[in-house]
Image (cartoon, rainbow, N blue to C red; front, side):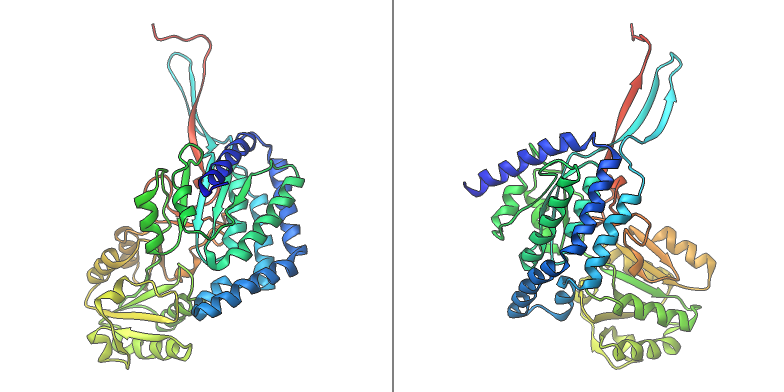
Length: 417
């Protein structure tokens, strides 16, 4: 069987499964998710054995410490995956929800009802927990899914998908509800993007190279999860202790994820007092600092280049800029950011409200770390990505983002003529 034939078969199987899933009862879907959660816990040792293969290969390839951290499946992370599946099972089922309704003067009852998208193709890199999260959200929302993870996590992803699929099928989910591409051949992505007869939407999670390729090649609508060039802006009247606590958390709590801060902006009125202490705390945590000219007059750090403002480091590296005004901070964020997650630290209510209004990002924060941009943290159970698109859905893409709407009209013999 050629690669093209293999992808065609997977697409047909997914389309068949989606026809069953769209009318599957909530009780069966929830039972399947709970069974998959139990299976992940019981197969913990086997999952970690497969994960070690990926970690060893990653070290041989010279992956950074942050990338290896994204890749690792610890006991805690496997338990978190299982807990995430149970959280999704506990959420309301969006399928069949009536979002609004209207009674026409002639008596027609016109409503809009949530329905599954159908078949969702997900292309992602590095983090194997995405395999479980994506499978769970798609199943709960009545969608079949085709998963294509990165080659660096091939063994982990295959193992998680196998455990999930086997358990879900035994609990009543249709066969082929969740499928994963087992090849690391890059050509498989290209073939997958041609399956517009079977796949209804593509959700990519990865770097600029991956996203650019998908936009250029896909015949299928794309809901993009772009890079996370996230900012924290410290206004001139920020609380010093709060500003330091938020900056350190946003950068160092887990630097290898998309909602970690990559650029710190500090108002010139606060920089002389606050920036030295913040820089010391970040440096003590192993963070390499790169600053503009005004920053370097206040702290010892490397020079930031134009490229730094548009770089998602995913590592313990931070670019810092001192700005003259609130307007300059907002302008920098809107110009150089990826419209993912951005925060202001301020005690000024008016400035906080302006920031929420004027920063054009999927998630905007006042006095909190950008690390909260996450489906679980937002009460969505999990997410298959943080959409930076403006069409269909934006922010953490969870159950509602995996549904569409159709009009449902009930009449009693009405005609136009």
